[in-house]
Image 1: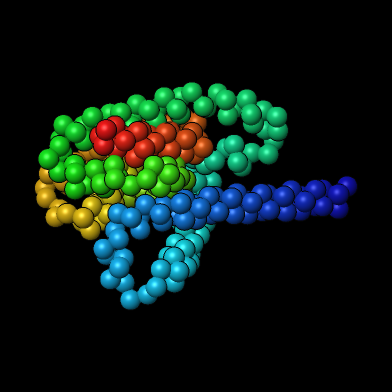
Image 2: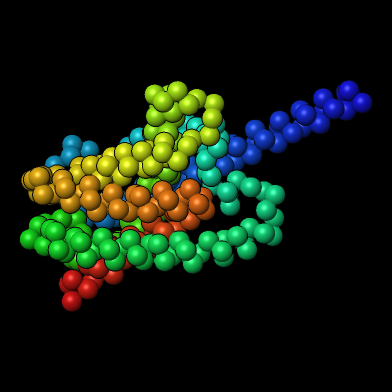
Length: 273
């Protein structure tokens, strides 16, 4: 009986370890795919800067993918470890094999709130963008996207929906929660509501500031641009994190993808017309 129990525990440990590696590989592949999907529009938006690069295009692509794969692997690994430690939702549809046929039902239950959140965020950000940064809009990536083929803009939506969600919700949000928990001496306990919202607020600011790098290559960064970046991206980050906490990473991914379709595909097409 003792030997049988040890074998059962060993088998369970092996299944758990393999299961975590499977989730790691799937999320890493998704994140790298998102990076690759962003290349066509990146090469269009920043053609002048890329033309000055000392390396030929194929080498730039290969180096870019290699660098991003290494960085994303670290982010996914650390993020999944902290997610499990803090008791966060993670990616329930991907991770939970016990759902079986219930996975489809759970996805259908997630589809409507995620889609509606994505549409709401996309429309809100687009309207505020026009009101707050109307004069700067033609120089911003959103404005310049109107001149880029729609298939490139659609591919970019996978970067937001996959790569950015994995980086922000799985890695950065978990890291912020863990660090704040250390400061507040709440190690070993599930994050409380106050800690969650402090982390969510910090993530929103970091997410907004993180988008300034792509803008700086196209135009000077002014105080108005900084405020706009933090406000607009912060709204999206708060909405996606709230959805993540309620329904998991897959819901946040879908919402982010839908909002990017509104912002990058529908919005610029309407502006061009």
